[in-house]
Length: 409
Image (cartoon, rainbow, N blue to C red; front, side, top):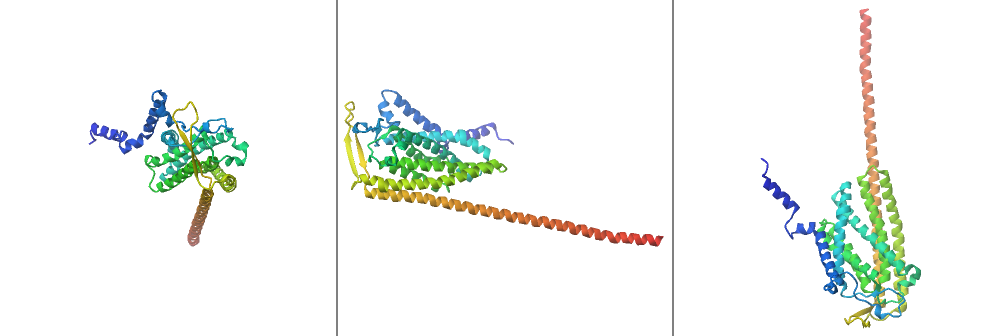
């Protein structure tokens, strides 16, 4: 007997519309919730009455241009401060919203066509999200290099005029969004229902990125941090491209072109990884061992300066910190160098594991080929033996028939 219509309707509504503010409700509607909060903050910044309280969520507030009349940089400069926390909150919500849009309208549709396993699905979504962030970050960084004359100023630009009084608005937004993105990865572990066995590794590399970027931001090593992040992200783009191409080849088994593209991207990643890590180690060594040594101080200093703009009545001040001490430089040099060597070691382990897997697959294929050849040979031997026995069985019958015919004659 079929269930009554009311029961069927009740079951469907509970599956599609979970209870308000329940865990399933928050997971299904997290993108809408984050975008709604962003809209409220945006509306608050638009109206004149509330704009002084809400504009802090979207742009830098610690203006440092007043203190450097001798500066040759025409752009407005900003320092970091406690108001950056409001920007971190807003841009973390932006990252959650963009993550949900990219997931729903791009990655989910591609994933339906590939039909991957659960473990490969998790890696596919991870690479799909990271590659978008890496591409945007690299393009943004290249624009900063062009606008702020990184390429024209020479390598000494990485440590010249340290401690830098301020950074341009786009440089500060770059660092804020970097921190916000890696912060948003923590709630995404819950929202995306990441498998328990994948959570420790994701927390580890998310925390590693977050701590490294925060260290470079707070110690005012902005220029070298921007260069190293760009190199690292550029390497990771090809890593995740090769991984996505591999997942595509698993779905398109008989596509020779897909396999060749996957192998080509993997080889490019190998070469770029080696060159990129070498460049990173050299830049770290030159900056912290030689470059910053010329303006070294004995201890960390904090200098607070009040605003001198006559149009500003907030009595706001900024604090300029100088971390260019031998201890900080040595700690940074050793830590960043060890991080680069650790990445190289992981790369070597990955390459060796892949070669073992390929060797095992080739030996298995060779064994299967030998076994199949032996089976074919046995089948052929059985057929030949059977044909020979049939011939020997037929010969006595023919002879017997011949003798019988002679006797009758």
